[in-house]
Every structure is written in structure tokens, then in C-alpha cells.
Length: 288
Length: 171
Image (cartoon, rainbow over the protein chains, first blue to last red):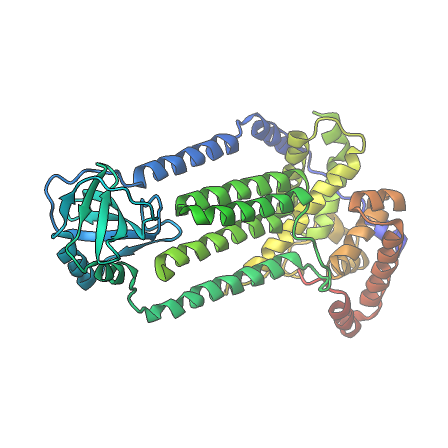
């Protein structure tokens, strides 16, 4: 058997093919790498996207119809609904209720308010202009004080309105579609697990391969998790989550290219990042 | 032409060819192996082992991709019987052809050990270095691979089928 196997050793080499391959390898080696410029361009593009999509604060010249209210509990930097702890009110009835209170605001002298605001809101009008307010309970919760952040002006509502303001800004529309959130998430998770299993196991079914090829990948993943969850309290924008996850992905792919060089692990990192992004996207899009 | 390329071209060519049984694919993977070697390697002492490692990773990646794509229906499944045999194998008679075909049917880890040990004539230590495993594992895989080959060759059609089921790597 061993002798017969050695006979397989005599395979003719095509010299022409050999020369061609060598020439092609040399051509490929002389080509400039596009990966680093592409990563830099991607980062720049995401930054630009964040800057462009962050709504500019414009002063309303003429008060027109309220089209949307973005609201957060307590004191917060409210920019858009794609922030943790911030939600938007677009329900017509809720907007009308709020508009009725808002129209009856009257300017008052500067006040010294010691307590924390109950809400921070951003009112977006139909002409795309916006105003930001902090809302305080006042006079034993009988009325509300609206403090306009950009002009540092105080306004007071008519009497006995704080309860109405509170109800309007705090109530949520019952949405049974929330349950459907689990369907795409579950499907995605199933596909992810199946692909991982298919790619990882070759022949040996019980062979367990480590998830990371170097412990630095684990460190990167842990730091990313800590970073995201520690910033959630500060009304973290979805764009920053994308950026942090992308950074983690680039680090993990770079480490993989230096240590493991396993194709399945590259795919697994990308799949994991997409899965976490998908989770947060659905959180903002459906839940909140 | 570069010394490393000249010295190891035949070795890498045979290694990939006997693992994949596909001449076209062998040329592609071989080119990629040397490309990666030249691109990422500054100074190296065991160039032979490193080249085998790169080629091995590429072959494994190829089989993984193939497994992944098997999700897609109507994917063309090219088996060893459908692939054209190398001319020099055909010329050496039925016995060698049978051995070549049997080699393609055994488990990938056995196949690569057999190829390196008997076709490339590596020592046990060299195989262990190239495949990043222990010498005992190399010896075990060699013995099991030879046993699987014997079962396939001696079993003929009926025995061959049983041996294939037992030893075939699911790539």
C-alpha cells in the first residue's frame, strides 16, 4: 500500500502554468491594498451620516401645527427618538391634547426652580422647526412651568394642567405588534446558529472550536458591552451604537487576520455584530 | 523565478490536488497560497511547513464554503466520479486509479496525513508541525487512513460502499 501511494507522487508539473501563476502572483503583490483606505472612508462616511442626520435646532418663526414631540423623562439632551430613554409622540389625539395646553402658555418672570424637571421635550412643528423645553410641576402641581432651553424663557400653563401634561407625555399607545418583534429576531438567531454550526464542524461532530482565536478578541467584546451599557443611561444615540459595534468588529477582524485566519470566524464576527445591531434597531423601531 | 516558489511548487500542487481532486481549483488555491505567503511573510525558517499550513487553511475554507452553500437548493454537487482524473494517474493503470479514487473517499484528516507522509514523504515530525498536531495523532491518523484505504480497495464495490460510509469525510 505504502509503495503504491508513493507512485502517486509522480505528477507532471505544467511549466507554462507554473510561470503564469508566478507572473500573476507578482502582479497581485504589486497592487495597492484598498482595505485600510476603505475602512477610513467607511468611518468618515458614518461620521458624516451622523452629522447630517442629526436634526438641526431651528427656531420656529411662526408657530404652526405640532407634528411630533420627542420626550424623555427627567433632564436629558433630547435630539431624536433614536436615543435610549427617548420616545416620540406622533399619535394625533395626543398631539391635539398637548397643543391645547401649549397654546395657552403665557410668559412669566424668571423663576428659581429647585426641583428636577419632570420631562425634557422637543416639539417639532410641521415646518420642520423645533423648540426644546424642560417641564416642571409648579404651585403644588396645580400648573406646569415650561422652560424654553434655547431662549432661557419661562412659561406657565393655565391652572390645573400639570396632570393633563403628565398624562399626555407619559401615556403610550398599546401596540400588540411588539410580540412580532421576536419573530425576525428568533429567525435571525436560528440562521446565525445554523450557519455557525455548519461552518465550524468539519467531519468531527464533537470537535469544539474556541469562539475567539485570541483572548484580545474577548477583551474587545467585553469592553464593547461595558461601553454600550454604561452609556445607555446618557441617552446614547443609535448611531453611536453602530459606531462602537463597527469598531469592535474591525478590531476582531484585524485580530483574526493576525492570529486565527479562520474564514468561519470572520463570518461569525460579522453575523454577531449584525445580530446585535438588529436587536437594537428593533428595540428603537418597535418597542420604544 | 523565486527560490521558494521553485522548490515548493510541486509539493503544494500535489498536496492540494490530492485533497481536492480538482485541477482547476488546485491552480487557484496554489496561487492564493503563494500570494498569502509572500504578502504576509517577512522572515521564515520553516517555509515548507508554513506553505502547507496556508494551503491547508485554504482547502478547509473551501470545504466549509461548500458546506455552507449546500443550503442552497439546486447546487451542483460534483463528486469524485464526475471529476476528470489527472492523465498521469490514468496512464498508470486501474490499480492506481482505484487508489486515487479511494484516497478521495477517506476522511479529510486521514487523507492529508497520508498525502504528506507517503506522497510528499514528510517525516512524522514534519507532518505534526505542518498540521499543528501531536506526533501520536499523526501516527494514529496514518494507521486509520491506511486501514480505511485497504477497506475501500479490498472491499470492491460492496465493501467499498460500506467503507465509504464509515470513513468518508462529509465535504
